[in-house]
Length: 355
Image (cartoon, rainbow, N blue to C red; front, side, top):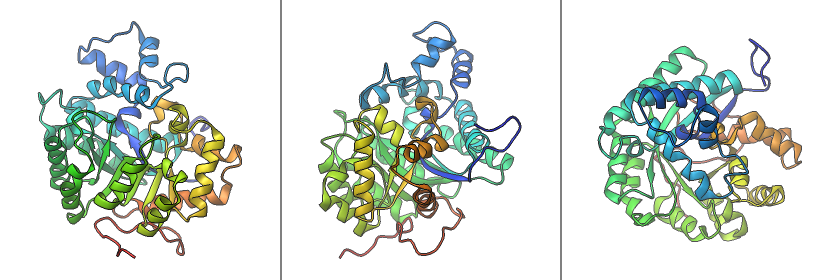
């Protein structure tokens, strides 16, 4: 923790995988909920904190973790709320964890109260909040990623991609897919054309897959159809050498979220986390470290690094390499260049030749 009125200890850090819905302080969300007259299912502030925190006694599965987003997405479903939340996450990350390069992601269709609000207003307000934060903290570089969601109809996801392309010159830097398996989800193929259009427009592509057991087949389909720059989580690939070989060959970077995967039991324990990291290193897969949601999980980037260091999974040199990976794989223009000599992801919008 930083000393009072002092700079946080440690080096400047980059984070590429953080959800706005999981990154805002509970006190801020609580005030916003009351200001909007939202009826909460709990009494009092501390009950609300429990509602939006993935405490290990209450949240033990991936589905349980995702269910927390219902309340944060509802509270953030206004232009003013999105502006304030994005501004808060960027500024708070820099002040408390020395995050000087950050990509924030959110689903605008989960912030419009079932189409009651206009998605353009939500996106523009989020961009305004980001620009306000960057004006306050000129040391920071940031960008927004618009997330499609498996719970949405294919035409809604396609609309989100079109919005990302529309606002790519204002600070939207990429597109993503997130969310649980759902009946409306039409499969990876439904996003093949929209994501190809995003790539052609110069946006970066990332994709949540390979987080839970049984998602290995989807990883392969995502690599083949979407050809992403990065994959969110992707840890199940560690059990499949052919997937690791393809990830390395295609220059795809994995966005690892250690505490998140342990809390949701996507990985059972530190031994499984160690196994994943060792397999990635053996196959030359580039990966970054991220929180996924610092407020949901009561973590931050220094804690993620300390978790791996204390367990003897990564030493200081390897931790520094993950930060260089993040800076080189970032979709944010003018992100700090990395040290030469390490092969990393292709630039957004470019596809490597198949071997």
